[in-house]
Amino acid sequence: MPKIVQLETFSNEFVCFVKVTSEDGYSGWGQTAPYNADITAQIFHRQIAPWALGHDCQDIPQLIDRIQRREHKFPGSYRARAIGGLDTALWDMAGKRANKPVVELIGGTTGTLRAYASSMKRDITPKDEAERLTRLCDQYGFDAVKFRIGAECGNDIDEWYGRTEDITKSVSSALKGRAELLVDANSGFSVSRAIEIGKMLQDWGITHYEEPVPYWDLEATQMVTNALEIDVTGGEQDWDLAIWKRIIELRAVDVIQPDIMYMGGICRTLHVADMAASAGIPCTLHSANLSLVTLCSMHVMKAIPNAGKYLEFSIEGDDYYPWQRDLFVDDPFGVQDGRLTIKDTPGWGIEVSPNWLANSVHKVSNLSDWQPSAYGALYDNPKLT
Image 1 (cartoon, rainbow, N blue to C red):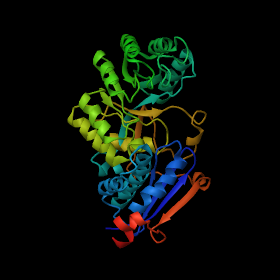
Image 2: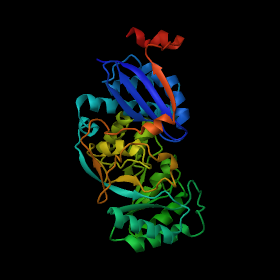
Image 3: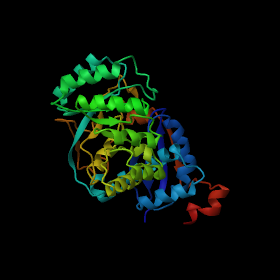
Image 4: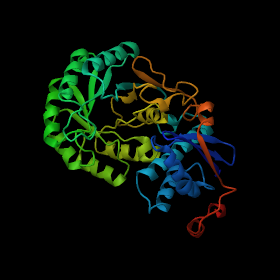
């Protein structure tokens, strides 16, 4: 049972990569959730690393559960984000140790996976968005696209007056029959307005209606779901397993959309996907940027039995997300004919850019240097295990 002897973070405001090293020389790369990632890196070394150092690197579910129990006084999104960095790094290490891609370790196969082209823009005119999505379908072969309606948490106030109706008409007129059409409201509407918009979307052939009302109001989401024929989807923000249990029991949505990095890694995401599978609910993961989250999601989507029809793939380039520029040495996604390619390379099959790493903030927690706090020494000193 090789032990974890070193944990490293490489971070800036937007991205935090995690590197884990075991005593027998294996290493793995993972990532915390993006945004305020420099804060997550601090939490990682303060509250995650002390419980992981010196412990078996191979029983990943047991270690993730153990850390959550030790940090039970600090439940919340940041804890989950930090744990996700450890979890995804350990899975990469496990793949390298077994000489297999992660997808095979969790019961799936390599190959291609259908993607939908996901637009993040609301500051674009309906005409320009329709032309842009059509061009991308021509260039990359996408046969499913998602565009934004409403305003993010907009309380029924649109990005500008009439934009939701106009962009729905424009994109549907350009692509209906050629591509499956999805929309994301980002919690923008009240129940009554969401239902009104949902009926209009149905008339224009939209098949996927994401976060129509404030995502934290599960009963409101359930009301919209029950009132419409269109698939209502959601869950990207949620990390708490108790909340996920309620979402699934209420059938608040038709399709669940957990985000691996927000959830706290692969183990917890697989648990949520399994709960949904038992209830007959499909799972389409949220992966809204071109960091490691999309690659991890590709592996999971190819392994779960209730995978949705496609995986989100952001079409926004460096102009919109400058922080995702040059994260990896090579393109890990392999977009062709509207599909993503999972390679048979061990682990995640990626190399983080040395130049990016050189310009990040590097912090290390070593087993040999670790000094347990009184709490750690009393309950769980890794040097004594």
